[in-house]
Length: 282
Image (tube, rainbow, N blue to C red):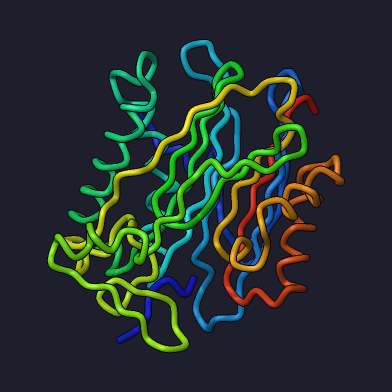
């Protein structure tokens, strides 16, 4: 992704992956919820930097839906690490079953510290993240950066995440000694480099960046039919409502994810594009 201007047990084998182009599908044990995903490499001359998670797992006799998009920059070390460790770290928190939101917050921050301590192995880059955890009809969504989650409620798009952009968090950046550049023809960047104001990793900019997530919680009721998680390669060219309209027209979630990406490519998105579509009451 062009975010950066150039100047317990690992769940990796269970829940996700990455390739230059891949797609797949799955469902909950009772078949009530189905999901599909698709990833396509962008036109930039570097390896694919998007990773995903999509699966249902059993914990304490309960079924959890785990879904995520990790959109890396300056290499794939950090998003690959997130895919292997972030959900595991969340579920290892002692308070998870009584206070999921607090556990998600703590795990995000602890995972970022672990990434920074392993920066010699993971590289100098970073990653956005959007995660969703579904437990018994209740959904916890968290994000860092500008990968986004959007729900369809009665056919109306509801954005569940906050796009963390340098201009909107300029005060926080400047209070920490950083600056936001606004070069003509370019997007605002932290210290002239990073086009998001929160991210995992990015050790050289960490004193000016945050990695704490925004967290939203909602119930999945009879009016909620679709959840879309995607990297900004989709959202740069497609409004939330248009994405919901496309996904709702296609009953099979993997086909919906593929169609969303096809439409983004038709709109000339040049970034890596990754998308997970979850359909409730499938």
